[in-house]
Length: 187
Image (cartoon, rainbow, N blue to C red; front, side, top):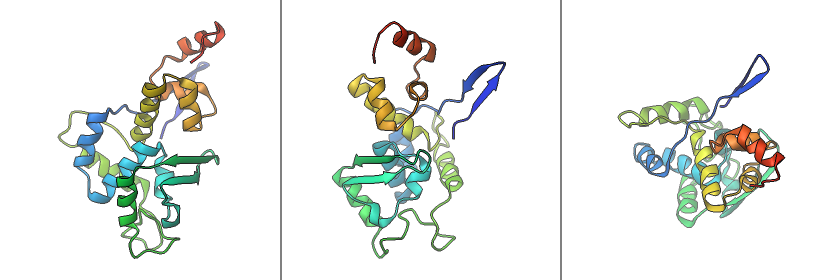
């Protein structure tokens, strides 16, 4: 989770840790089958960990529509055939109202986010990089930016209210972004 601190009028936003495509593959290879699917879905959808964990069997479709927990905004995205099949395999013998990523310890609950964070940290052992569950969301944003070159399109895809939030995901200097907007340059 990202936090902002204010010190003497200056806002300092803690940026999500950056993860690259090859690094994500190494991370995924060190996870259990179910956690692999969770991380892959995070990379393909850009959903926050809380939204991923809240997914229920009835939500799983090739084109998924959810309401984000944090922003309360509608989010629609497509997933590939292989990821769809993997998600469906997790829902075998479950009712529509069951969580896809259910807790083994607590009946009727989803896996807790701290459990996922712990599993990711364990999977990172021996790898020469660091990341978090939120890094998958950042990778999603960076892939859109690489494809489109548009900060505005990334902002829309991420459901960010502020362009400065999007800039932190893209490791763009916020001051330069603001100067570009003031001088009529559009991204």
